[in-house]
Length: 75
Image (cartoon, rainbow, N blue to C red; front, side):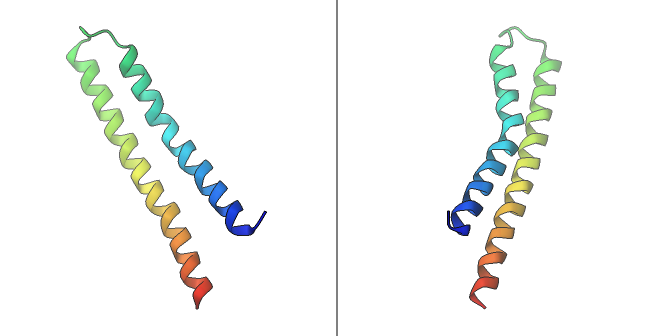
């Protein structure tokens, strides 16, 4: 496989792995009873916001690294 293809596969795997906790949170939220305590819902929201923030930072790092590599290859 060409190196670029391997890099894309690695990036894809890293993105999927970074997203997994967010996916699990939504599964938990989906399984929660509709009459759940407001405190629990707020906790879910806080967890979701933290996970999405972490996910956003990880994506920026991953894509930033890929972008920097492309710039270095041109120069």
